[in-house]
Amino acid sequence: MWLERFQSILAIWIYRETELRPFHRNEAKEWARESMRGIWAAALMPFKEPDLALDEEGFRRNLRHWIDDLKIDGFFVAGKQGEFYAMSVAERKRLFEIALEETDRKAGAILSCSDQNMDVVIDLARHAERLGATSIVVHAPVLHFTSRQDETLYQYYKTISEEVNIAIALWSHPDSGYLMSPELCMRIAQLPNIVAIKYSVPRPQYVRLSEMAGDQLIVSTASEEEWFDNIVELGWRLYLCSNPPYLLQTKHDLRMREYTDLAFAGKIDQARVIRDSLNPVRKALSSTRPQEKPHAHPKYWQDLLGQVGGRVRPPMLDLTEDEKSAVRAAFAACGLKTA
Image 1 (cartoon, rainbow, N blue to C red):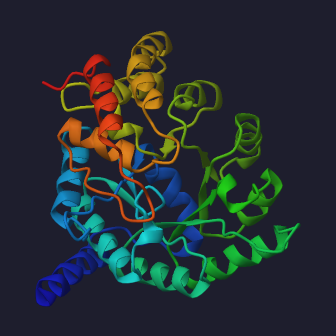
Image 2 (cartoon, rainbow, N blue to C red):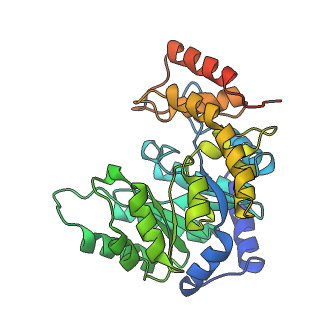
C-alpha cells in the first residue's frame, strides 16, 4: 500500500515538473487569470459505515463523475464542506493526493490548508506544493480577544505567502467572527502569490471588492443563486465554490453548466431562462435542509442522485428518517432529470 502511494506521488511530481509550465510565485497571478475559470465545486467527503473511515474509492468515483459527466472545471478539496475539522492532518494530506491524481490534466484543484494552528497550515501548504499542486486556499482564522484584526491578518497571509511558491486564495466568511474589508483584501492581494478570494459576504461588499480588484485579485462567492448576475453584471468568470454544481445537475441535466456557458457567450436571455428553470430544484434543496445539518442534507441528496454521499463525522448530525422522507419527496418532485 505504501509503495503504491509513493509511486503515485512520484508520478504526479514527475508530471508536474516535466510537463506543466511551472510558475514562480511572482507569476502566480498571471497563472490564475489564465487557469482559474468556470465552475469550481466544493467537495463533500464521504465517510464509510461503520467506522466512519475515509471512503477513498467513493471520493474518487464522485470526482470522476463530476469531471466526466457534469463537466465541472475544478474542485475545492478538504475544506469546510469536506469536514476538514473532523479529519487528521494525515487524512487531509491523503485527500490532497487523491484529488490531484483524479483531476490531473482534466480539472483544477484548490487544496484547503485552513486550520487554527499556523504550523498545520504551513505543513499542509508545503505538502500540497511537494505534490505538485498549483493552488491552495486558507480561511481567515478565528482571532480571539481582538477587536481590530487587519495587521494581524496581513501578517498571517504574508507568512503563508512566503512559505510556498504556489497560488493562494483567501477566504473570508462570517464564521471567523469578522469579515475582511475590501481595503484589507486589496492590501493582502499585493503579495505576489495571493490570486483569488472566496468572499462570503453581502453582495454590495463583494461588488465593491470586485470593482477594486482589477487584475490583482479574482473575486468570487459561494452563492449559485447570484452566479448568473455576477457573470452578467460584474464580468465574473469563476464560481468558487460550494456544492450546487453537483447537487443541481445530473449526467442527463446540465442546466447550471448550460446557463453558465450561455452567459459567458453573451447569450443572456437564453441563459436567464435556463437559470430560472432550476428554481424548483433550488427550492427543494433549501426547503428541506435542517439548520443544524449542513453536511448530512446534501450528502443524502447525493445518495439520491447516485453519487457517494456517505455519513458525517461527529459532532455533525445525521438526518432523521422523517427528514430523509421529506428530502425524498422534494427530490422526486423537483424536476431534475436522472435518466
